[in-house]
Amino acid sequence: MKPTTRPARPQFSSGPCAKRPGWSLDGLENALVGRSHRSGPAKGRLQAVIDRSRKLLDIPDDYRLAIVPASDTGAVEMALWSLLGARGVDILAWESFGQGWLSDAENQLELDDLRGLTAAYGELPDLAEVDFDRDVVFTWNGTTSGVRVPDGQWIPDAREGLTLCDATSAVFAMEVPFAKLDVVTWSWQKVLGGEASHGMLALSPRAVERLETFTPPRPLPKIFRMTKQGKLIEALFKGATINTPSMIAVEDVLDALTWAEELGGLPALIERSEANLACVADWVARTPWVDFLAQKPENRSCTSICLQIVDPWFLDQSQEERARAAKKIGSLLDSEGVAFDINSYKEAPPGLRLWGGATVETADIQALLPWLEWAFEKIKTG
Image (cartoon, rainbow, N blue to C red; front, side, top):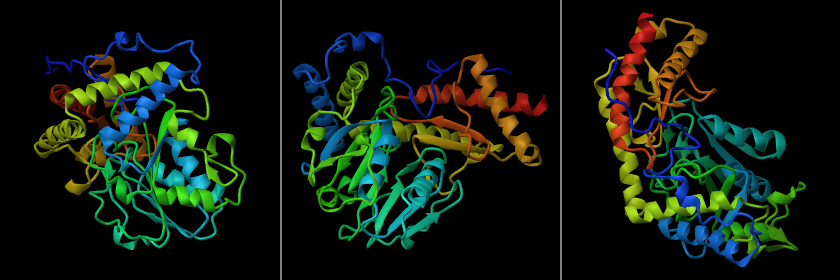
């Protein structure tokens, strides 16, 4: 039978993600709209985002932190184009975004000494094969596969190369050891539920040294340039953004940071995300037609929770029929107003993807699960 309890908030998108509980437009009433982002008050707001993010995430004091254009994608591309080529590069890829960085390194940057360490959806590459005498590029959490690295123990403290980490679905929801990472990127729309188009970039002293001593063998677009005459442009890391930011988006992320601080900071955010994963895991364990895409529990994401359908009826169909069936589940729940945007990523195996980041209430996950069972049976039986 159709469930009677509905999620209070049906937003389960993996980006942009659900706003914080209790969010309303009233939180944006002090946004400095119509003001130059170079004005004193606006720069103060931008610097507040940097300072409060640093404190909440416990980023080392000697790391530079900047707000950059084009979301996490822009932040990653800035790092790849500006830093790679000084030594050999290992790029880890186990889902679409990692594959994208690998493709860019090969086809756009045309790196001569490049190794791609890849794995299928649901798995991780062999982390023991990574050579830290080389630069290493990887995603901490595979947003489109639901597979995360279990921890940072595989990364040595003493290393010759730089570690460049796309951490956009991990920061604010997982323990990310910044001291083991020389470049870390993320965006506001993941975990905090901020608005799109703004990225953040953290650089270790080793990354800054590379920027100031290495000239990339390629022209850099203006929005990628972090140095001038061989020196870091320090203003970028003090609220002087490369392009014009949205002051509405800035006010919105400040509102989210306030919520996170009042909640109890990073430990509380992690606890909420892990509770959402645990709720889904309990349901998967007793539901025979569904399983995690990530088979190893320690590698399962607590933010982008990716599920595969393992019912024989589903598996007996062609790939195209599976994709249509999975999409029908998402469309049916969307039409019922109980779950928006839960289909798997277009390049991932057909299935479902639930965002479990800190802005999602566990009660809403609990309310959604019976609806997944109802929708699956309805699609299966026609």
